[in-house]
Image 1 (spheres, one colour):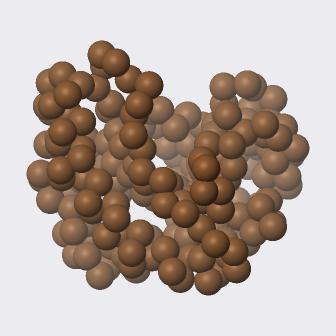
Image 2 (tube, rainbow, N blue to C red):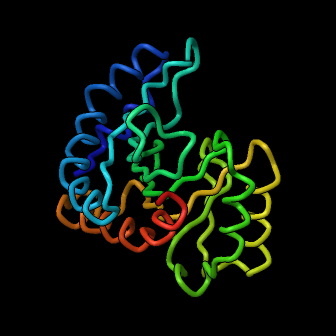
Length: 201
């Protein structure tokens, strides 16, 4: 499903060239992924969901270092709500349930996240605290205290994010197998669905 063509887009110099590559090489892939996983995800949630493809519209000079698709219940936008993401940097693909700093009720949601037992439920998942950076941590390698620090930081620090899901290196063989990758996306979203439903419905 993913080839070197998608990752090579991020070697393009200049905003216009990179955005042209994102539109031609990556965004059609996002639509294919949504067409395959979107209907089941919507059925699991029980309410209509909508695809949002990152436009990077605020950028005027610096080309984006990553790009993504988001799936959310709000047709007008996704950044103020919990949302599902699939996207990529130049060296990895990420599959997230994302809570980003633009959420107006992030303190309340952060407190609810702090009550979850991520180590026992999601040991094979990654978490991250900044959607603009690659840094992510495998939960089974983290202490409970470290996880609590990240959820508390999301609740209390204005610019903090919280993301949970999977990261895959660009050379992972599953990325070249469309059926296997889509199954992994569906599995990731299915396991995270209880958190999404609890916070959205």
